[in-house]
Amino acid sequence: MTRSRVFHRSLRATPPVAVRGQGAWLYDQSGRAYLDGSGGAAVSCLGHNHPDVLAAMHAQIDALAYAHTSFFTTEAAESLAAMLVEDAPASTSHAYFVSGGSEAIEAALKMARQYYVEIGQPGRRHIVARRQSYHGNTLGALAVGGNAWRRAQFAPLLIEVEHVSPCYAYRDQREGESEEQYAARLADELEQTFQRLGPDSVMAFVAEPVVGATLGAVTAVSTYFRRVREVCDRHGVLLIADEVMCGMGRSGTLYAVEQEGVTPDLITIAKGLGGGYQPIGAVMAQERIVRAIEQGSGFFQHGHTYLGHATACAAALAVQQVIRRDGLLERVRAQGAGLRQRLERAFGDHPHVGDIRGRGLFMGLELVTDRASKQTFDPALSLHARVKREAMARGLMVYPMGGTIDGRHGDHVLLAPPFIVSDDELDQLTERLAGAIHAAIAQARG
Ligand code: PLP
Image 1 (tube, protein in one colour):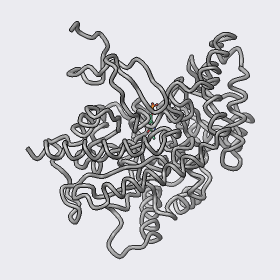
Image 2 (image 1 turned 90 degrees about the horizontal axis):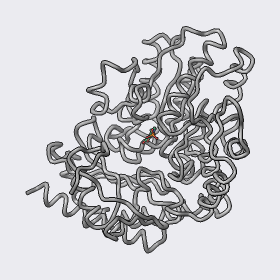
Image 3 (image 1 turned 90 degrees about the vertical axis):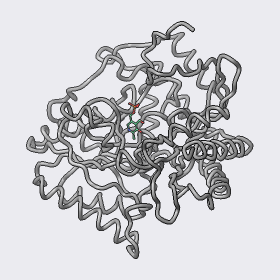
């Protein structure tokens, strides 16, 4: 075979060539079918080749594919922003469109910083985030992320960010500690971190409402985000909710944070916003932040060539219209409950599945050598990579990751099937996953 000239993620293996997609399935060049149990990386919320999205994209490119946002706006961008704002938490007033999740985080950080400059608090510069979070791979987003392994070799290039504990009840909630006590302990840690940095110098706290890639669909205990919001409010610190993975319906509500009873100052979204049909992300901003910039310098000192790309906005608008028209948020909740049931049936007593967690169609399994001690597999075994390989061999896409507990130890499997997934497909997903986990562990054990 001729050497691929694509600089692939791994330079040791060339992935199969994808040629076609339909619903929850992808097909490679040899005709093999793969059930998309993870929506790629929690992206393909409507599955593949949705006719309404394709029609909207065709209509947009036939009229106008792209117009630079320093010259024009478009109907697609205006309609999409209006729709997203209408359904967003109270006082959200504007959407700033970018091309993906990392760009959304970068824009949110600069928006937070400019807000404080505009309102006469230029001393605010510190960012606080959580260990074991993922916020993207550009330098600013990587610095905010709390995964030690991803950061390590780039550490000399990263801006300073303070990291506090994640809300990770499976491992960190103490014996005899209630959810409220655990949330209060974490809020205290945040408070102390602000105090140490000098609360007047802290700009933002960044957190994923449901932690995706690095922890595997970990939800916070019920009062955590309210306590965090109180600490931020006490010190005038902006709360940035990173919903790039968990938002846009994935967790059962359009915005994941709706289930936490708080309103963030900025929300980043991407992935399910355009469902993979086009690259698009956004920052949803509260009115007072937009006002401060509007009444101050009048413009946000940021921008990229592809901001608010007309075809991307048209695709995302169609995706979001289909979600509303077809009642897909209810479907996420129903199919999510069905997926949880199946996982509990298949893995509830499994000796190597320590935790089954998540919300909506966003579920994770944490793999352990022993359920009682929660001992992790030796990282040298790369169990997560074996699970992925074995799943692909069985025609199933899942999104496993290692380093769950500290960037090095721990393995989990993330599941995020399309919202249109059928009961029969959920059966197949569970069955193939059970086979893949069984084979991967048998191999790892030698
Ligand atoms: N934030 C979160 C929570 C994510 O899960 C991701 C991607 O997985 C990102 C940001 C980065 O998004 P992108 O890969 O589109 O740059």
